[in-house]
Structure formats: structure tokens, C-alpha cells
Image (cartoon, rainbow, N blue to C red; front, top):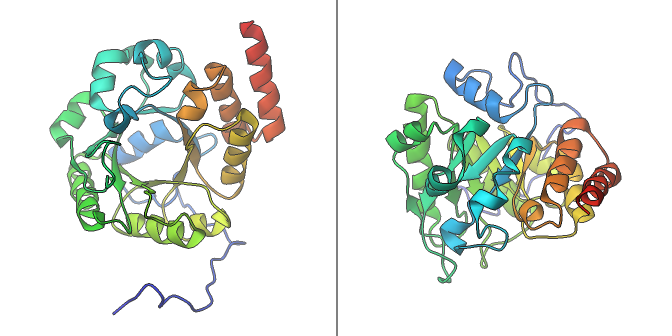
Amino acid sequence: MADKDGNALAKEYGLDTPKQSQSFHVKGMDHVDWGMKDRLSRIFRPSSGNTVMLAFDHGYIMGATAGLERLDLSIEPLAPYADALMATRGAMRTCISPHHNKPVILRASAGSTVLKDDMSHEVIGVDIEDAIRINASCLAIQVFVGANGECSSLNNLVRTIDAGERVGIPTLGVTAVGKEMERTTRYFMLATRVVAELGAHIVKTYYCDDFEKVVAACPVPIVVAGGKKVGELEALTMAYRAIDSGAAGVDMGRNVFQSDCPIGMLKAINGVVHEKLTPEQGYDLYLTEQSQMA
């Protein structure tokens, strides 16, 4: 029987040997169906292999988050500068115009709000037929590895993967970090690998020390969550380090829509993720955009 301490032997991640992709620009997806490749190619730019997702699904647990009080006012101007939009079906239908023609990472899990101490007992909140009606390019499921609701959240994940596979829609597994969970390299290595092993096509997690090991041990693309609002240069530095460590993109929310210049910040993130700008160069781009607002 495997145990959590049974992996103490020395490990070799082959950090100097990149995983070979034979025919497709998205890690680990050489052998999936054409339709799924098409959806993944809308999310990850073929030119860079990376993505900049704009997350504004916070309301499904937090209500009217600061900066998202009016989605039609805050997100509509930002949509052209994102590669993909991560949101709930309610937000997309009521507030976001379909003319942007952006791939949708559809929040497909639902559960307790921030009013509850234990938020790990989520359920599948979107039927696959409704995801098709919305034309979702990907389904996002939150998983709570190490929490009380671990097993049920992993069940949500595999059921969604199975439903998506039948119609060619990939699944993004989101590794939640609650109050009782570790925020260590070891934890993120375990959580991301479990999610990938269960069949997720993309994994969203947090940046940590030795992140290159987390990426190397995960056979599918990792997208890094932006997390809470920090200074613009700090957020750009995190994005740069994540990409430099092998991440395939970032999913930024509060560090964009809570910025003093959201469009400038999103342009700067694009520069770092797709054009290999340094954090300082990205910050200069942000400052230039900010100055034009005055």
C-alpha cells in the first residue's frame, strides 16, 4: 500500500531534458482527438505555446468581488487582450458579449461560499449539454487534495473529464488551497500529478519554490494562478518566473481587474508570457499604458 512518506527516495526529474512533443504545441496532447486539439489551440497560442487567461469567476463563492461589481463594465474592455476567459455560465450569458470570440474556460463546479469554513465539498454545477450550448472550450473543476472533501471533489473531476471526452471538450483541474492545506512544493507536486493522472488536460495551480520540479513531474500543461492582489511588478515577476520554470501560462484575475490600469497590466502580462519580456520591461509597458490614462 502506498503511503505519503513512501516517496522519500532520491528522484530524478530530468530537468535538463524537455518532454518531447511530436506534433502538437500543447504538452501531453499529441494523441487527443482533432476537436480537442482545436479547442486547446484556441486557449494556447500556437506561436508561443502559452496562454494568458483572464479569471473573473470569483463571484461563484465570493459574490460581488472588488473590481467585479459590474462585469459588463470591468471585463468587456479587457476581453480583447486575453487569450481565454475563465468565468461562470451566468456571467457569460448576462454580461459578456459573444462578439469577442474568445475561448471560454467554464467554471463547472459549484459549492459552499466564503461564509463556510470548509469549502471543499463542491458538486458538478454545469451539465455537459449546457457547456456545449455555451460553446465552452474547456471545463474547470476545483479539487481539494488533502481536505475533507478530497474524494468527492476528485469524483467531480473524473466525471467531468468523462463527459467532456465524449464531446471533445478538455478539462482544467484547479488545485484549491484551503486553510488546512499545505502550500509547499511537495504538496503542489502531489496535487498537480494526481489531477493529471486522473485525466485532466490542463492543471491550474500556484507558483512555489522549485516550481520547475512541479512542472517536470506533471505530464500536462500547468497554468499558474495569479492569487491575491499584489504590486504590479511583483505579479509580473511571478509570471516571469513561472514561465521560465516551464509553466504554459497564467490565469490572472485580481492582479488585473483590481489594478489601477487593468488594460496596461494585461498587456504587460501578455508581453511576459508570450514575448519573453522581463518583469521590468513588462512593468515599463504597464507604466506607459497607465500614463496614457491620465
